[in-house]
Length: 115
Image 1: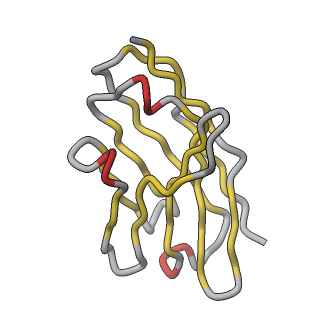
Image 2: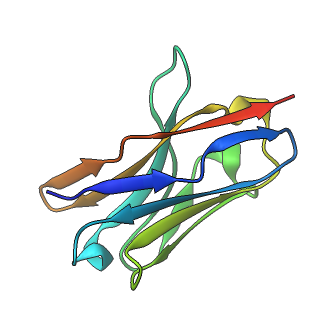
C-alpha cells in the first residue's frame, strides 16, 4: 500500500499561481508513473498531467503552456506548478501513483480560482 499526501491547494485570483506537492510513502517511488487529476463539481475526473519513471510528460490540452509537472525521486515527491490560473481550473486535484498492479490515489486538495 502506498500513501500519497497532497498539499499546496488554496484560493487564488485568476492569473495567479500555485504549486501542488504530493509525497509518496514508497521506497520505489522512482518506478511509478505519477499523475495529477482533477474533478470539478458535476464533472468527471480528468487527467491534468502525468510523468513517467523516465521523465516523459503529457498534459491535458487545457493546461499546456501553463502547468508543469516534475518529480524529485530523492524526495519521493511529484509537483504540479500551475501558472496563469483560470476560474475553470477550480477543482479538487488528486495525485495518482501507477506501477504494475498498484494504482493509488491521494485524498485530494482543493484549488479555487476566483475571477
